[in-house]
Image (cartoon, rainbow, N blue to C red; front, side, top):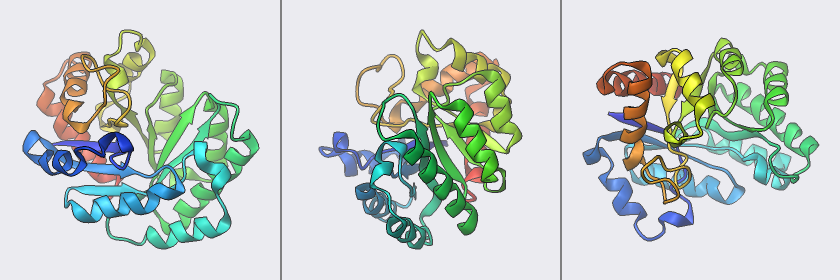
Amino acid sequence: MIFDTHAHYDDEAFDGDRDELLAGLPAAGIGRVVNIAASPRSIDECLDLAHRFPHVYCALGIHPEHCAEMTEELLEEIRGKLADDKAVAVGEIGLDYYWPEPDREIQKHWFARQLQLAREVDMPVVVHSREAAADTMRIMKENHAEKTGGVVHCFSYSVEMAREFVKMGFYIGIGGVLTFKNARKLVEVAKEIPLERLILETDCPYLAPVPYRGKRNSSLYLPHVVTKLAEIKEIPEEEVIRVTEQNAVRMYRL
């Protein structure tokens, strides 16, 4: 079954039908979902969803957009909650230079601290990196991210950069952007990186694939990504589903 490795079902976009949607995923061919925390508020919400649905897991961490809210006390609180059986990774963490705030030095500090936390608790990381390729790679190397592994999610860089992350033992997260007309770079990455290092994700409610682009995304739309990836790789869709599911199970150590 399809494994959605990165979702945000705690988002208010799902307030109207969250429980019904999540409960129906297995019947629609979506076997497992990892719901990813981003803000301090989302930590407990992600844990709650994971506890209420047997096929839902969670990653706990603070997104670069919210890292100005980080403190050492909050980091210790997250450490304690990562001991939960349904918590499978530290994330999403990383760098986002698209917006001027938070300050880049603050982002770099808390990215490094959360990478250190992942190493201390021996869990993989879910990395967000936008317009920050060089700093992301440098900080990951300085903090020995190869010892935890994980995924660079919503991958937006070159094939060469993808190969560097793969050399560190990381997976490349592929989602709805693969179906966009302007996704030339990502299509090249999907073609050149072995299927054994790719995992499927939605980042829902964002980045819905064609033909739903611009609408609310959900795990139910992942078959469109599977179809596109199978077409690029020139392999059956069943193989894409089988291998990417195995990859996700291995990465999240389930």
